[in-house]
Amino acid sequence: MRSSARIQVRHGRAVVPAIHKHRSVHESHHGSPPEREEVNGRDNRPAMTRSSWEGTKESSLFAAKRVFLYVSASEKHIGHRMTSGTLYQSGWNLDDVSWECFEPGKVECGLLAAVKSAALVEYNAPDYVAYLTRVFRDASAQTRADIEQWGREEIQHGLALGRWAELADPAFDFRGAFARFQAGYKPPHFATDDPDSVRGSRRGEMIARCVVESGTSSFYTAIRDAADEPVLKEIAGRIAADEFRHYKLFLETLHRQDEPELPWWRRLLVAVTRVSESSDDELAYAYYCANVPPAQEAATPYRRRRFGRAYNAQAMKLYRRHHIAKLVQMVAKAIGAEPRGTLARAASAMLWNVLRLRASLARGTA
Ligand SMILES: [Fe+2]
Ligand SMILES: [Fe+2]
Image (cartoon, helix red, strand yellow):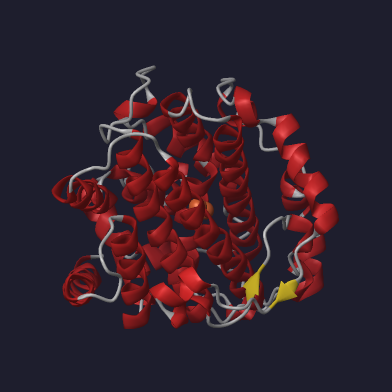
């Protein structure tokens, strides 16, 4: 099965009618709160539903404008390529995106498949917020507020990507796909009330979060660089900037913890473990739910290996060497290694080769 064969991108449509006719997109996403109850009937998003989303809308008074940000000292330390290009300020919302510039003829099917998957993963943020809130239940009010704000921004990433995917493929049902994803993807630490981090400590939890934010920052930067469609390029640029700020937030939170410093081997183990978890069901199942319509589920059942490779076939080809170098430098800094040291350079070269191998394997099997 080739995933692109199922994607029904409507090329050649007039741009403005394509947007204004798509009322469901406006009605479902245009500033409305993300309510999980709407998609699965369960109310398990108590801490950050309507009121917190409205808080985000208020912040739009300070709406994001395109700016060229000066490279901060910490960014210089990690690498200048991290901040190349246009960056965006925080506090943006869906109304700030130039949706009217959408060009359907510039949508690339493989990239669309990856974006649909990412939208589902991003929109699932409240489960992570609930988990992190438990882990940081005794933390300062500021830390808990930061976690809530982080979750709101991740939800917005999902909404922005989902809305773009529905513009690019009017047959795509973002909320329906998310409902299937949420019903089928339940990592153990989301399904319990265990208050402790699965990483063994709050420091370990923050290192794991830094790994994830390093990955998403690199991923959306790679999408921004690869995309020809201008609205996707803008959204990816906005999200990439958010992800880098999330990384810095969690790095600062890591260093604020009053727990004993983890030994070197433990920090490295947390990072390696978290990277290896990228091969679990999350991305593969998101790809499946986003790209296999419900009517085809019986004929095309979910297989982790198959759809993990299908995801890799689309995602891995986005990366260039400098994206991987940046990712590794960020992870190295999070575990206390020298971002430009020998270890980081060796890890960067190794990861680059692994990703190229994965991409070639995926191309042969997807
Ligand atoms: Fe995100
Ligand atoms: Fe993030």
